[in-house]
Image (cartoon, rainbow, N blue to C red; front, side):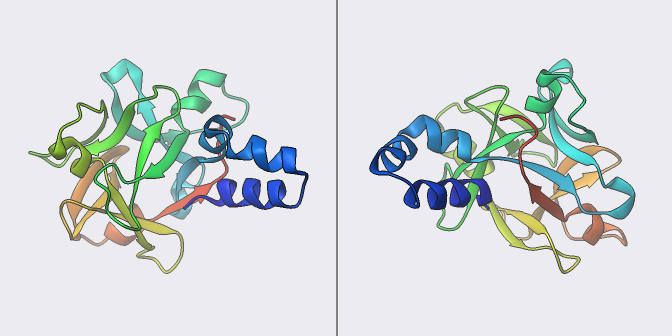
Length: 183
């Protein structure tokens, strides 16, 4: 889940003691944890999970490219951190453009949004995702740690936490973890 972090650690270990010391500073590790998530479905290639500030911090997928302005690229970049609910092997996705805000299930429904960590156990559980082998045989699918069998899914451009059903579920619930759009 953190290929940039692994690459940065290997580079530091191959360098000098100063390189290792610099890597171990939290700020450098935080930057190395940045990733973007692209839909793996062929017609959605180039569409990424994004934060939508204009829509009350909604979460959606939309096209993205390096030619977009910095703010848009940051909205399509996530900091991969250990799960807020402390689930082994699971992660939380913090907004790079709005630190302290995470991709989470709205708990009483199926919508996925970007919300500030309120410190509650409910929030931490609803903002923890467990990566699994992608439904289509490659990429990653993300299961909600607090609700086994509930998956991060794109449907008509919006994001949902939903159980597996429908003919397009596999394609709409598989993501490619790629280098971040914003450093």
